[in-house]
Length: 466
Image (cartoon, rainbow, N blue to C red):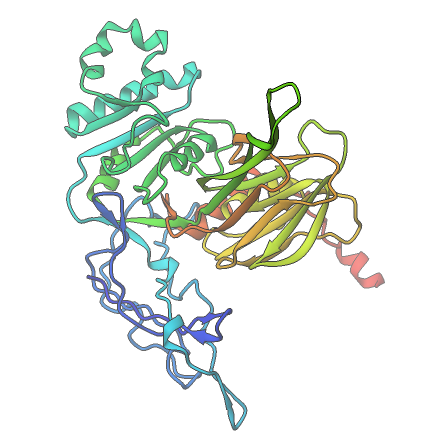
């Protein structure tokens, strides 16, 4: 087991701090966890009371290993190694000569430094789920090559969705038939494979990763995503040398980024007509039923990786929805709608709506209005532990519509509610280098972040004039 040193991180709702401790491994799927077999201690300069004393034992004794997630950056000949925590420094809990923070041991949480999160296996992985983008002919050959490598070279059990194998190009390929017979197949919403998959390989764009997340309402196995789609912000791996990359993941020792998900609960009110006899019998001798409506509620839960979008749907009126935070009404959204997103979703629809982009290691929930009819309604970021509730306003002129990662779209009527909070089941995404380098590379390559023609420098004679 690894031994980590943690900063005292404050719980903002209780005013207490997390303490240094040893971390127990957390499993992802049947065979994976996020620790390494090496004994490592990560410390910050303020873990002890003296802020000026540096951590003498930080990173000592760590064996340097090269892996797909610890390879040198482009243009660099040195191996990248982070020497400080991605968490902020632990704050001093004494304020002036007499004040201090009230300690509450019941609210202590245990959080591992994101920079130290690495994949290893409790047992060798045996089963892999391969998710392929549907109706894309360019992915047929990579899909076949990968499946042949997994089944024949690594002797692994490959799970594939039934509709993938219904592609005529796969059905009519006789040479692929012996490999196809070894597959285990499943159908979405019918078969539960959550406890049978050791890790996941995605072939396609960001949508394949979102789809993989939707298949696992609980613990998600580690996900390795190959960039074979259009954007590829969440897919850091290239397919050219997939054999060595997949082998290294199977052997363990890869960096992980834990992408937080949203736990969403939709409660819908259904009203059915119920016949109630009043005043006995009418003058003509017939029973006189009076129609009443019996109300019953139905709850459905979802795990969302990117965002929950509430919008006005086909109506031409403004959407009018109330947003509650921990039971308190914080605002009423009057506009085209509102986006509630994770940090991973901050680079998706929320970014198009004007929100800031947040690194996936930041624990937060974003609330972003869509075309609000207000000059002062700015996107906000709230702590990850709050619970949001969205309901149709009593004076709304029309219903609203909600979707979850662009899927499962449904109408929200009066009396319905959408409860949203951070899920305890993140999606462990395998990094190509490390969480920070991969994120900034995606910003540059996919979104062209801060691309601008450089300003010319002054000539010598021009500088003298000023």
